Image (cartoon, rainbow, N blue to C red; front, side):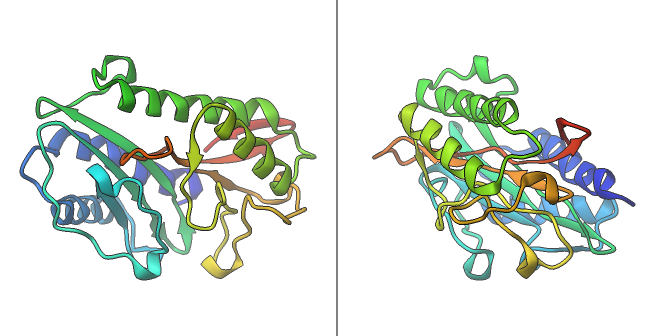
Length: 229
């Protein structure tokens, strides 16, 4: 099983959890269901501190914490709620890394961003789409991790949002051991193209808001073109 297949486990799990999330479930329930689903699809472990699914909802969606200190809350999902799920499946030391923010309105997952009636939530998810499009239009094979860091943080701020990440980065390389990762951060002069694969995962909010948004994909260069895994 290669990287695209392991990433496919994460994508299929997000698609699955959208069909079963309902009001009254807890974040602990969601984590358990996601981890069981990933294992049923072929994951043999979870690479990030052995946590397969980092789950936050409501006013916890702004929380940014290392996996080492993460504890899943028993917070209950409401009829109108915002949930972020970040998955880290692994098989044979090959990683997946995938996150989405999911919206429930009237107890049902809203599949299309444009159909979200809560204006703040809709705008937050639309901003995540803009960030990924801007990243793909900005980067070339010669772009460094640091250049992407400065460009995207400036873009986030100019659009009225803030970066919530607890150490300020926007993603990392995909490697074999978590301590070997390099980050989209200040001071990293390595070119993006020197990493076989890297994540882009802006975690953003509006200043003073209690809601955060996250969208994470793995990207790579094919010749001179940036591609999503």
